[in-house]
Length: 145
Figure: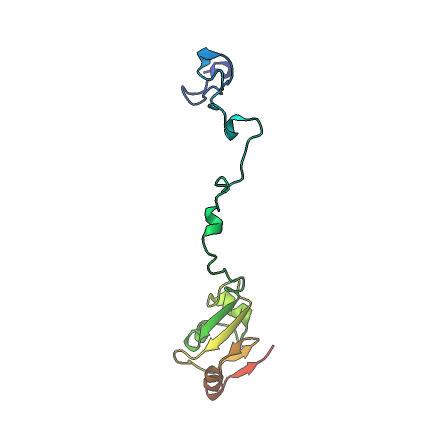
């Protein structure tokens, strides 16, 4: 095999359409544009979604719902998950490392769910009133950031 003998596979490269080159080409006279009308004219176009002046579908349908930008910012942490954190002081970074809260979380809150294994120290992590009571009862502490 030599480089000068290489050719593309049969049918992989189709010849470009040569419009307006006579009757024999099959695309002569109107060049595949049909007779008259907006699409037959040079510069004839319409916007995406344009329906000839009729109210377009995207404007006929009602607006519904929205996507919250802050949906993934906060995370909930169960009391029973706190024992999975190996750090002495539990903060947001320690929760992320342990895989309890997602990487994109900007704040976390401890909720009452399950049992607390032992005393824990929270720093910069919010807690509900019930969770705060359980943590302090177990000998733990909560520091506000």
